[in-house]
Length: 301
Image 1: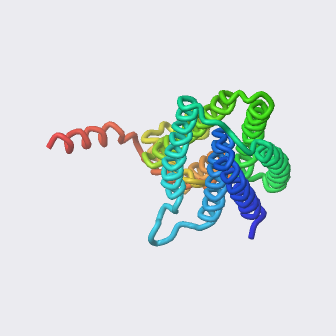
Image 2: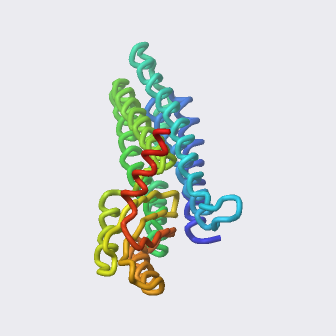
């Protein structure tokens, strides 16, 4: 098992453990903030398991059944995760509003304080470990996981503060305010997951800056007169690029092929850690107008 996979298993196990103790104390104490933190830990566990799943699938090559690989499974899983998380966030928001309206009190706050202190310390240790793995492996997935758990340090600190305020002053509104705030944050995070999954399934093109770099890699080759039909998309670690290159009709196929090889090398150098699948069509003249006219006429029939 690779170090990256071990790191995702460790982070998901830690998140699962924190979920159990937070959820138990959240229900027993009636603290919305602690309960919200428990749901946030569930989110963490799902994300870490998703990262393990993503790493495992990214290591599998394309086959006869899945010619383009299984990268879009990540997007589908992201949408499912986001939907579950959004429902959890809405439930927490409902609990916060309910507590505010009916003025429900909290109990066992001393135990809740101990749990949140332990949670903060455990999360700090996990972040240190993930940063170590990220530096050693240069894994983008682990770097993202470490960044995600860094934000949990702040949310755990906020929950600890709210429980402390309620414990010392008896002002229950502090619990409602922090719990509701975390619920809104969870819903927002779920929206980002769902949005990203939908855009990947719809074959969104690469970021504008990356597309410009691809165009520059093509333009720097003097043998290429022009290019058209540049299309890009990404599925997991796989980046797909399609383009038509226009050459002089007198160039040999061997020379044109050498030029296209250099362009492919330049494109792959943009993000060396990604798996680039590049398909270049070599044209002896610019046939884009002819093809566009053909498609228009075919569509009007």
